[in-house]
Length: 375
Image 1 (cartoon, rainbow, N blue to C red):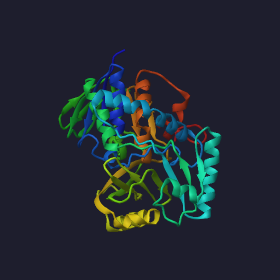
Image 2: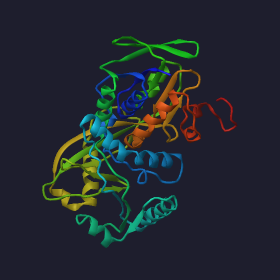
Image 3: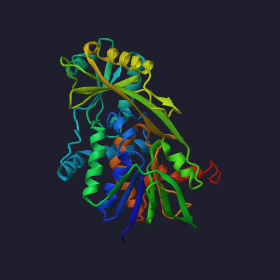
C-alpha cells in the first residue's frame, strides 16, 4: 500500500527515515527549518560506540549492536547510490583507564560483553603502547573494542539525503513548522512558512526541539537537551590509528587528518556558543591521553545540542492517540549509531508491522505508571 509521508526534521534520523521509506515506495517530503544536517548530526564525532557507550546489557545495547552491524553494507550501498564515502573507519576503539578503579569497571564491562558474544579484550599497558605508541604513560590499561567503528557524521547525513533524493524524496529547507491541523485521531495538515503540507503519515524527527513541536498537538514529550562542545586538532607528526575513549572525553581520528576532541555535556542548554572553559577542559583531556598533542594545531571548534529523553531511551514509534503520527527522537549520544536501524524500524512501523523489540522505545511508555495505568 502506498503512503504519502511528511518527515519533520532533516538530521541524520530524519534523512535515514526518508531513505528507508522511499526504498519501500513511499512519497516522502522532509521539512527542515534550517539546512539538512545543520544541527547535532553535523556536530557529532561519528562514533559507532555500541559497546563503548553502554554500561550494562539492555535494549539500547541490543539496538546498538544491530544497527552497528548494518554499517558495512550501508557504507557500500550509499557509495554506490550517491558516490559519497561515509568514511567508515574499522580500526576500532580503545577505552582507556587511568587508575585501578577505572580498570576494574572496564574489565567487568568486558566480561558481560564477551558473554553477550562481543569482542572485548583487556590490554596491558605494554599492549596499549603496541597499538598506539603516543599514549600517555599515565594509563594503566585499556579495553579494546575492535568492532566499535566510526564514520563521518556529516557525510553520513548527506549520503542518506542524497540517496533519498535520488529515490524521489523532496527536501524543503528553511521550512518552519507553525501549527498542525487535526481531525479526530488524525493529523491532516501541517502549516509551515512555505504553505500547508498534508500527507497520510507525519513523523517527528526534530531532535532536541521535539518537545516544543509535539506541544502543537497537545503532546507532552519530555526532552533533555544536552549541549556538547568539541574541537579539532591537526598534527603533522602524530597519527592516531584508533578512537580513544575515556571517562572525560574522546579522541576520534578522521580521514582528513583531523583529530576530533569531545565533548562537553551541559544539560538544558540550547545556545551554540563555545566557551573558553570548554576548550580548556577538552585540551586538558587530549593532552592527558596523548601528550604529544601539545604540538598540534587547533583548527576549529563547534557545538551541538544532543536530544536526550527523560529515561535515556530514544522515542521510536507511533503516538497512539493519533492514527498517523510517529516519533523518532531522543537518541542522545547515539543518533549516528542508531540512524540506520531507526530508519528501517520506522519504515516497517508505517506499514503496520509490530515487533516486541520495539516496545522499550515506544513513546507511549510516557503514559504508563508503575501500576500500568494512565498518569
